[in-house]
Image 1 (cartoon, rainbow, N blue to C red):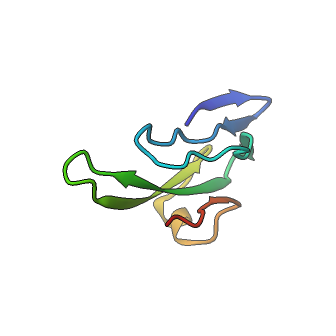
Image 2 (image 1 turned 90 degrees about the horizontal axis):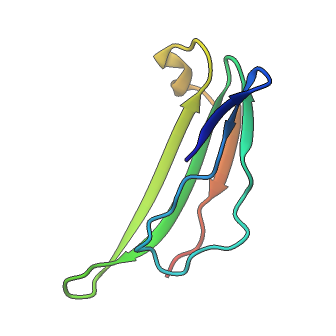
Amino acid sequence: MTLREADRSLRVGPPRMSSFATHPRSGRPPAARISAGQWLRWQVNYRLIASYGGQWHYRLDTFNVAYGTVTPEMFLGMPTRTIDEKGFVL
């Protein structure tokens, strides 16, 4: 995930997916922008194959990113913006 501050907002780039994930996705969402006092929740899931025994493991990564002065309680509410990359994984 890349973070860049510009024009009084924060540009949040897509998180990197594990290089061990199967079925990489194409057409991922572009970067998102949030303003001061806002926060973004970005979720992505994928399937991993274990190097031992070939068992499948499923993983869900959730990134909560806030910009500016915030309090921890902010994350108990609804995010200003949500990007949901959860997909159907076999």
